[in-house]
Length: 71
Image (cartoon, rainbow, N blue to C red; front, side):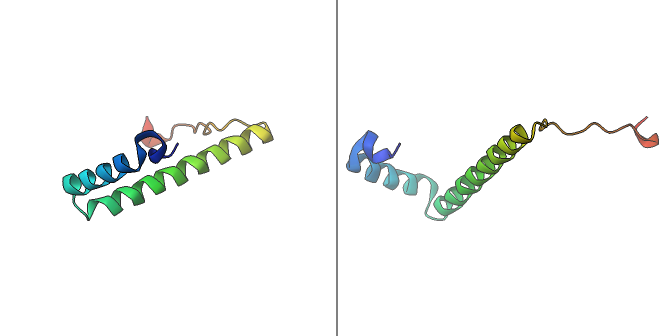
């Protein structure tokens, strides 16, 4: 849902100005980049889960046997 639908365009402008004042101009692009990366990783995980469901295998990692250093 777009913020403009919830708050109106005036609310979105006020929200943007407050965000710039609180976090500074340099922090906003970093936040947007991190948000985009998180969205990409989330979508990648959804595709992997869907692919594993279609193939009939579990998405769980396989267990390994303990080695001499683990004991």
